[in-house]
Image (cartoon, rainbow over all chains, first blue to last red; front, side, top):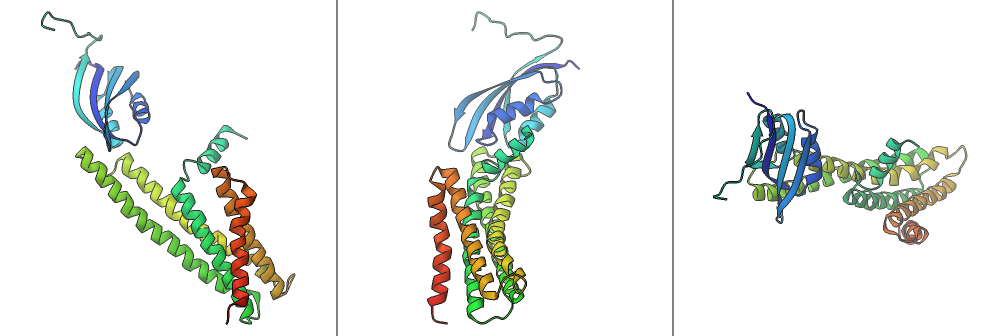
Length: 95
Length: 193
């Protein structure tokens, strides 16, 4: 099966642990080369974060396990890139 | 000093022993030291003949206060932890059992309960040490005086410690706390019975 090279995840997390520590834990996962985390929305009890994960062979199950172990939940997978290289979203006239 | 031990000291000073644990430690340590003054002065005034009996009385009080400190804070923190987790679970619409959130709150609960018990244990047991030397180095009266002095020093240390984290003058805060030990000793002398 083709390897996952890029994942964009919509994650809901409590205020603690921090976005920083969750990003570090994802980055420590095998097959992950780098992580970007950005705050989308902040509520009284929770924060909505977009994680962009890149690597040679991302293990989706391991990444979600790491995220859920922190108390956060993956709301949706917003973008995936698989195969030998990352293919960018191609603009179309409809866009 | 290695980086690891510096990091450990930093954690003990700030993060690992959080503000709640510090409050429990000092508040219950204050209780312990003042109870110790009451027990030792009361024991001397009631005519107890030897230092070991005073130590037995003091250790009995230490067991009671330490158990009270650990047990009550364990239950209080457990309830607070459950309430906080439930509020977060309601907002997240998920179960946070066996996640970092629960593990960290449980860890805080353990640290808070231990610090709550450690305060009165130190506050009570340390001032009892002169009674070990009663007969060898001190008379019972001298041992009582030294014990009150040590309790006042422990209270002073608590005050100075709290001042060190709140940028107050350490000696003023220490004297304010230490004065309580002197007041309790004097009250014990003048109160009837």
